Length: 197
Ligand code: URA
Image 1 (tube, helix red, strand yellow):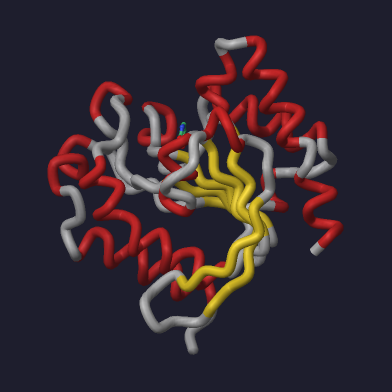
Image 2 (cartoon, helix red, strand yellow; image 1 turned 90 degrees about the horizontal axis):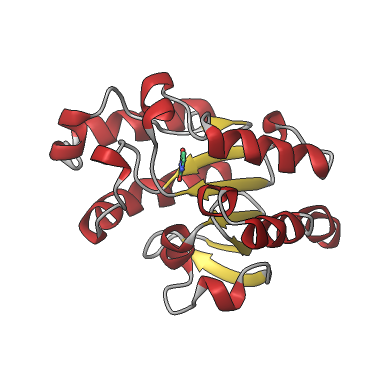
């Protein structure tokens, strides 16, 4: 079996070769596949790249990313300790929400990515990301509640036990002081979740 990085490179290449969301691809500067530690226990999943991410090819490097880095620091972690990606891997024009068909098109690639990394904790940022894993839940009701789930990323593939921690999206929390504090408080649960594993 090829090493993890080789497998991840192959998934990124497949997104391009399979011509996933050609309309988004045509408008984007580049694919924003993922960044960070491919052996991490924690994977954070956002929605889709914004302007800065599109230009740099790295997820969460703009204002939301700065806030995320601050929260990581608050819990004694660094970007190098985690892996970070998005559901949709091309920037939607004008930062609009990803469309259901765009999320659906990228989901198998996200699942393959997770199957390679095998995180123990998946932190979903925002409702779009949460609903990929927990489709029937409302973020306002369940944010900060760690859910232990058994999931198979693909039909017939291995079962993985993971903890999913649904959090508000940092971009939404940035401009809403109450939500900002809620997100900081919810984020602070990550070390104790990791300790309990
Ligand atoms: N928001 C996201 O959901 N992802 C990014 O990469 C940047 C902002």
